[in-house]
Structure formats: structure tokens, C-alpha cells
Length: 126
Image 1 (cartoon, one colour):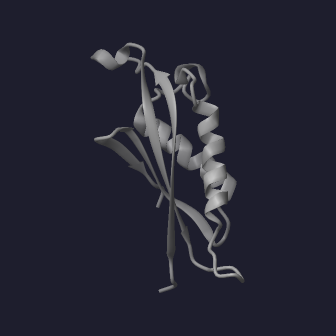
Image 2 (image 1 turned 120 degrees about the horizontal axis):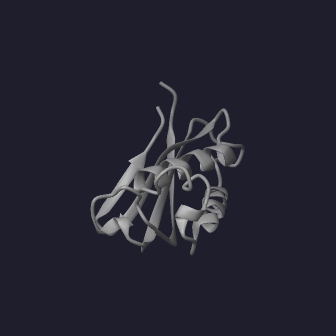
């Protein structure tokens, strides 16, 4: 079995949303201070012994977060069409990050999105 290296970075953003068709308070406008954990798997190291620079993962993740930070998510693509639930936001983040950093050697393995200090969702594509 080939070696695997797991790298993880954490960043955050703030945004507001409403959950369409939700039978409770979350159907009203409210906001969160989201925490994003991006986990990346690599199978090889480069010539200086790194899989990928943490700075590259942070930069790419922060670029995605900046598109959501201090916005009303329901006004943004793809959340005009799909409900901006934690699950859908986690999938969006994962897929956008994969477009930016995936290579033959490096893959986003998991994206965990914390809605509160005590509630999170993890998304992965196996």
C-alpha cells in the first residue's frame, strides 16, 4: 500500500442564510460564523520533502471562503437553486477546492464545515 500524507488547514467565514421549506426558526434570516477544515491527501513528497505547501491549501480555501464571507448565501450561486444547508455548503467547498488543488498526487479528501461549536458536517467523495 502506498504511503499517504494527510494535511489539514482551518479557516473561517461569516454569512447569513435562510433554509427554504424548513419547518422551524432556520427558515428565517439568520447567520453563522462558519469554521472550515480542509483535509488533503498526498501520496508523494516533492524534492524538499513536502506534499503541498500549507500556504497553497490555505490560499485556495480562503479564496472560496471570500466568495461567501459576509454575504446572504441565498443570493449566490449555487444556493439560488439549492438550499444553503451546511451539507450543501460543505459539498460546494469540497468541489471548488478540488478544482483548485487536485493533481495526480494530491486530492481533497474531506471538507468539514462547522456551523456552531458543537455541530458540523463532513463531506467526502470516495
